[in-house]
Amino acid sequence: NRYILIDTGKKAPNGFSQGETIINRYLINKRIKKLENLIITHFDIDHSGGTIDILKQIRLNDCVYITNVFQDSKNQKEIVDYLKNNKINYKIAQDSTIIYKEKDLTIKTYKPNINLKNINQLENETSIITLVTYKDKNILFMGDSGVLGFSEIEKNLLSRIDIIKIGHHGAKNTINQEMLNRLNPDYALISTGYNDFNHPHYSTVQLLQKNNIKTLSTNVY
Image 1 (cartoon, rainbow, N blue to C red):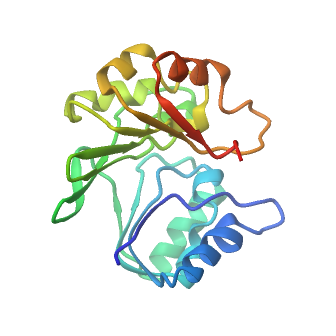
Image 2: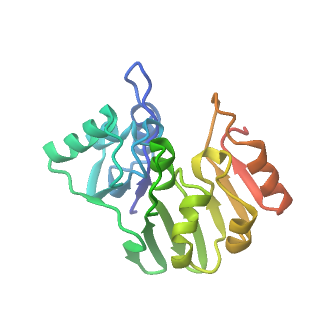
């Protein structure tokens, strides 16, 4: 009966967020009134747009983890100001650091350290990566990070990942053959829906199929 949430959905131009219209309703329907931790992988509005709406309804037991790469956006400022003004505990996520542990379960954050001139690419590749280890199974959540971010944390990862949540909604260059050889996952998860960016990219899907990795995507109903 402990829950940790990674990212909070997007916020639409009309002001409604998926945190309010989907995630909160789901949590309340499941009688979940409290989160142990909330991980905001980065401040892109499709990943963090529902943060405030969720924190207004769902209590937080421990901490919100955020990235240290600020995009100087209205969304990022509103979130950080809300955390400060409401005295909600928050921390900058650290690389290769355990944030939660109990019997058979460990949750660890990784933080790529990359210097990129393109701010959008920088925000994506340096987003918080989360490793969930349950007994002998390892699940890696890549946020919006891809091949570049992975190369920065690879040395600190376990030898094998059973399930990988592909970064950046399965966009191009989120995985390559060397990455899959290193991780050797059985399953890949892709979180995406209708979009104008052709996510997931055909090259990502083809590479997963070539490696016989069973892929589950939220754009396939």
